[in-house]
Amino acid sequence: MTPAVTTTAAKNIEQMLSLPSVQTAFSFFDSHKEIITEEQIRICSIPSSPFDEKRRAEYLREKFSEIGLEDARIDEEGNCLALRRGHSLSPLLVVSAHLDTVFPRGTDFSVRRMANKLSAPGISDDGCGLVALLAIARALDVARIMTDGSILFVGTVGEEGAGNLRGVRYLFGKGEWARRIDAFISFDGGGIDRITNGALGSRRYRVRLRGTGGHSWADFGVSNPIHALGRAISRLASYPAPKQPRTTFNVGHIEGGSSVNAIPSEAVMEVDLRSACEHQLLRLDAFFRRAVREAVDDENATRRKDDGPLALDLQLIGERPIGETRADSPIVELAQEATCALGFTPRLDRASTDSNVPISLSLPAITLGGGGTSGNSHTIDEWYDPREREAGLKRALLVILGMVRVKKG
Image 1 (tube, rainbow, N blue to C red):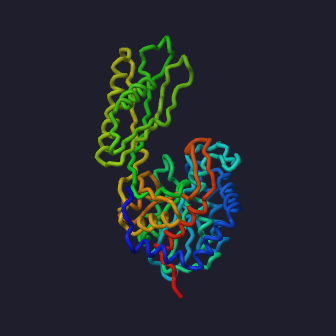
Image 2: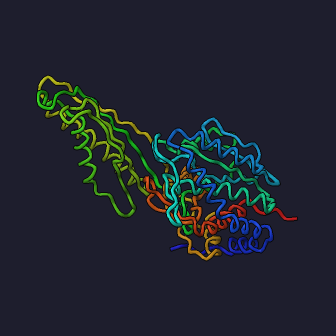
Image 3: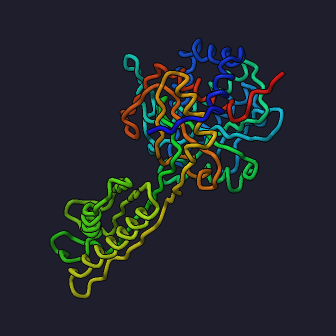
């Protein structure tokens, strides 16, 4: 159940809605629906596979410069940043979306239109978020809205998969703005009701097994790395994952071998473990690591005499912190009230996003949908419907202005 919003947040939203400049910005969203959608298509047509986000970052940098944002550039990690300076640099609010997709190099990122829907890998996650950055920056400029605080627009790298939040980690760790950021909002995917204030924790592993390999008939009895992975997967599948607090596991990638009649010399799998509870995540993590070791031991125990054992390389490739921005914090209350003011029912939730990092640093942070609807996320059939996108952009604008305050006079 969504907590009651304080009078302060409600009054703040009401005051902003009465401002002519805010209504001008709203009108921009309404009158530029098709232009915003065409921009999203251009962004999503630029390939942006894991660790290969440079072209999309360069495009975003060019657009930031065209809008007139200050010091539009790409940092050492590959993030694209640009500043909209207010009367002061404090408070400094980061408004972000991630540049990367989950799809490997060679993926066809062409966007297809299907009636009211757009379909392409990453069209919603996070093409919707990236175009929201540009639409909001343009609306602020067109409406000539001046703010007390400043807004740092950021397109981050490495939000997906093995990226392990590397872009936002750099932003808050080694980046030049690291110790000056006061709050954080990311846009990830579509939707208007969702307010992600909970950081879902995860641990991700790459398991690599190496053996001698051989002929499937002549060398039968040699330890088989794929068989060992199968044993480990079977153990993991039997884990009694609790529904509350929700805890999940997934074997997302597996490879190895060269022929149906050859014992492979190597096999690899990548595994994702998640939980809303730190204790449950650590418990699942310990079970998984034990299951892998026992599976390898069992496979090695069946090998022929004098044959070498399998060698195990168990590597932690990703770790995302658990945490929460309290429901009664100003940023969450602003988001709830803005959602209600636009005629929607807010819903607090928990997910794994760029907000995990600032939340873990005890900074106020949330992730919002960019409006519209979407489906089939993380598949090549991902789709996005831009109808009612403008409601998401209006909500975003209200929350942003509530954090940096509209300058009076």
